[in-house]
Amino acid sequence: MINIAHFRSSYLGLTETFIYQYLKNLKRVSPLVFTLNVRNTEQFPFPEIHMALYRPYFLGNFISKFGRNILNRDFKVEALMKKFNIALIHAHFGPDGYYLLPVKKKTKIPLITTFYGYDMSILPRQREWREKYKELFKLGDIFLVEGNHMKKELIRIGCPEEKIKIQHIAIDLEKIPFRPRVPKSRDEKIIILFCGRFSEKKGLAYALKAVAEVIKSFTSIEFRIIGDGELRQEIENYIKDADISEWVKLLGMKNHDAVIEELNNADIFLHPSVTASNGDSEGGAPTILLEAQAAGLPVVSTFHADIPEVVLDGKTGFLVGERDSSALTERLLYLMENQELWQKLGKNGREHMRSNYDISKEVKKLENIYFSLVGERT
Image (tube, rainbow, N blue to C red; front, top):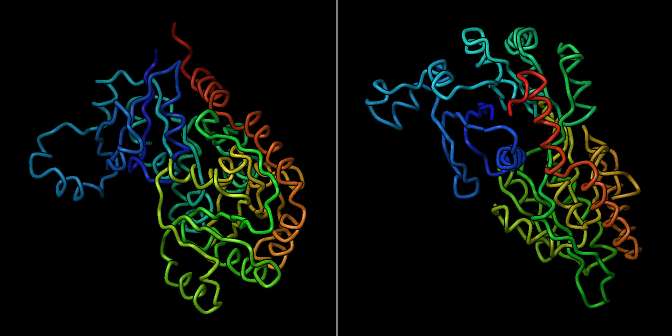
């Protein structure tokens, strides 16, 4: 089998299940990971992880982590590509693709770069990165995006359309139990769940405002929040000032298994993503929206980035405009008052995930993209 070098500056962030799903499910090629920093291997075990110094300004980090002997070890990427007989380079996130251009030039190995979010929403606002991306788009072979919105955005910032292919983020449906939701009795609480980083683009502030309004009409609820981040203090202050702590539970960060358990216990999933004031956006759609639908949850989210491709408005959940907390309130109350819809929306969501975001299908598409550049070896 051909050897594919996957580059990620840090292996792997807790939320980067979308990368791990592909790494562990590739079957017709042999994936190897090259990184500047290794973390979270308990959650993301992988047998082929190698250190590679491909970003010059990381030298200080390497020296501090490994000591002076680092300078006597071979972390030169060109040598590693030869040592492991690498046929193709796959960079995860735009900056990683750019920093691998010197390697591509020297080795003549084809380069695929996947864009995910901030790398195509925030970075192109900076002149430096607009210039860097011009070179990347010129020399890179293929660029992968999650959906049609991302494709349009990548074209807008200068990527040739013929070099772009849509490759969905994907999930392992076999690892996510499906549970049809049934109406709750009067004395049972309706569980609303949010999962995401406490950052502006995740829209948690608007979710809390909506829930605060829902409570005025419907008190038999519990809003469970998984996550943490830079806005935690603001979130805690709002919960206190709005006097809704009785109904809101901050659960902190959870590992993936615990997140799946929370999805299984919830009745409605709420995730109102927005474009942040600095331009940051989801790019495509959060993986958690796929997992929530796979679990059978009706979803309330926003018309943002590629979310409308992932959550089908009126069929697998409901979408509203960004920052429209009143519309979020209305949709939540509608789902609470029409609980017979839960099972239908959840069933549609599971089928949508099976048809379009199942890793067992999507990994074959990615392998075919690899083979289109280097050919399949038997």
